Image (cartoon, rainbow, N blue to C red; front, side):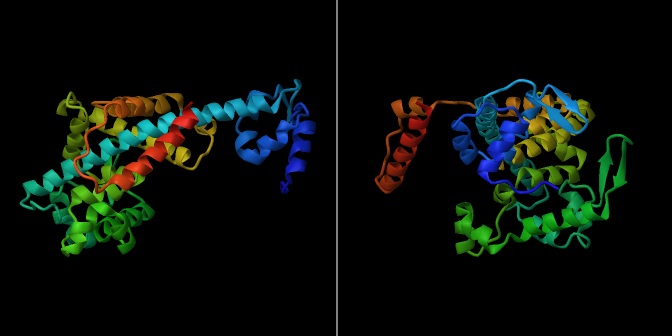
Length: 323
């Protein structure tokens, strides 16, 4: 079992075991980035052979070489975080619209019937299906091409997820400004707003429970070139892509190295996910900060002057970093 190493011990280990050049900059870099996120993911680029369980490093290299790769990961993650954010907003918009529209078609014009149904699934399973869902206890198996029962663990997870969507804990309600007027007026929160509290993982689970018509409606909302006739060629690919994108988003959010994740995922699946993000994150306008600052809208009142001041300070920090 590996033992904890102090920073001086980590440096000594790098010099003796990874054949790094002895430089003062090692101390500064190890203080900035943990060893596990700097050396472990990228050492595969530098060892020249393997002797049993030991990696052999024939060539001396500077720690700067590792640092450059880690920084490249950071910069790519920064860009991916932006476009995945756009993708996630679009996906949430699609779920919110399609499922709320289905409720509206059943006579629930406020899109709040989900609260009673999700809270009493076993008694309201027919109503659940009327909302466009399948039974939460089953799923479509792509390999078998048939509806199969899910595990007890998955059933429990899905049931708890749906109940949490219906009830929303008080802290989440209070923190979300979108809910304020509903809380003040003691009104149930419509589905089209609740969706925006969900994670990509939650959306994947909901998507897996939807019937084919609503799955296809969500895809058509995102891409109106999709036809019903190619349902089987799109819906399950989308589910696979959502899972890849969800995992990628988690990696980025936890500041973990992209390299290890990319290495662990089949290349085709990863590229399919990235292509999905790219195609669904195209914006009507994608202006830079400078573009918008050059042509700001005219503010009609002064109630938000303090917020505008904070925006200006944030912009200074961002521009200073980019410059």
